[in-house]
Amino acid sequence: MITKRMEKALNAQINKEFYSAYLYLSISAYCNKLGMPGCEHWFRIQHDEEIIHMTKMFDYVMQHGGEARLFKIDEPPADFGSVLGAFETSRQHERFITESINELLNVAVEEKDHATQVFLQWFITEQVEEEANVKEIVDRLKMAGDNGGALMMIDDKLSQRPPPAPATTIV
Ligand SMILES: [Fe+2]
Ligand SMILES: [Fe+2]
Image (tube, rainbow, N blue to C red):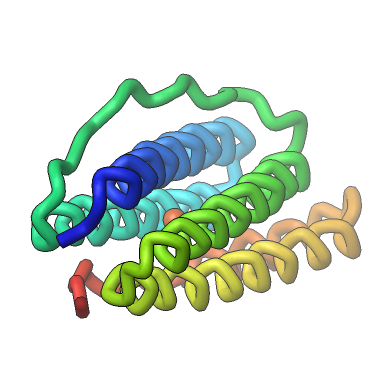
């Protein structure tokens, strides 16, 4: 059974995962506008992953005797300046989410909630991966600069991203 404080913190994170999905869906629309279908696809998959994160937390709260709550989702930006700007936005956002997950784990430790500490380990690992993936793309885009051929190659590579594994709640 999760405490009220833990429940509140997890519900706040559910909203942040929804916002992440919203932000990435908006970026995918922006990439569509730029005529970069690979980037559009990559962010669409990124959106799908965030929905999975949200679902995992939503289910976890209910499975552990809490009340899952849904709040208003903020409007994401629609213009990111450039494709590099779009990925830089994603990178900054993932850093913010990592901080947020770390803070959630601190709450679980303070609440002596061992099950939630185990549950959050998955998210900790996921954030390391997310940050590394997006950093790699940002680095490549910086190297490509204004080189149309190089940008097309990156876009083509990103079009090969496979769909995410379906949501499972382990704990
Ligand atoms: Fe997430
Ligand atoms: Fe993410």
